[in-house]
Image 1 (cartoon, rainbow, N blue to C red):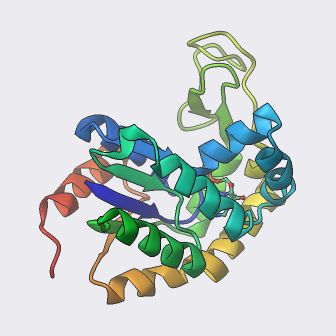
Image 2: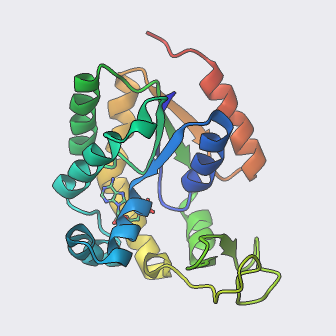
Amino acid sequence: MRVAFVGPPGVGKGTQAQRLAERRGVVKISTGDVLREAVRQGTPLGVRAKSFMDAGSLVPNELVIGMLEERLKADDTRQGYLLDGFPRTIAQAEALGTMLEARGEALDRVIAFEADPEVIVDRLSGRRGCPRCGKVYHLRFDPSNAGTRCEACGAELVQRDDDREATVRRRLAVYQEETAPLLTYYRKRGLLARIDGSAPIDDVAARLDEVLSVPRPV
Ligand code: AMP
């Protein structure tokens, strides 16, 4: 299975990617996670990426494309992969096409997750995460039983810098401008399937399995 997830921030791509990768036993590659880890470790890539991420902008194509190319070289991508948050621009989609062609591979599907922008602002501005174990909560929809601490490991929960409301709105605008054109790009190539990301998590997962069970038109 070789699939890419596209959608605005907060639409539930990451959650679904995590679950689908577990169900299918394929690796999930989230460029956002790889970038956050680079920032945390203070690598040269992380240092260059940080200001773009904090502002809610996209990290420049050449940095992200190079990073993905490196990541795809690992052995764990042989059984397939699920790309979460890549590509995000037409230039990235084209670079991905070239990379896959060189590997003798192609995407099976591109899944576009959709949701109303106000639902997204609500979801993201209430999101809190554990800096130690990575567990994610929501102040209203999925609060921690341990209050402001992680119920799994006890660390104090934090808000991602880019989850503040003003930054979320900026990320949504960036999505509309730079990423939404990918929907037409992949629709024309017969790869696009659209999914309502505002439905409950299990319903979205079921719909995703349904979409992926249909062979793509050639
Ligand atoms: P995410 O966790 O997918 O929402 O990504 C968080 C941030 O990382 C984004 O707002 C961008 O600044 C950056 N980022 C992640 N993936 C990409 C990508 N494919 N292209 C450019 N920037 C990216």
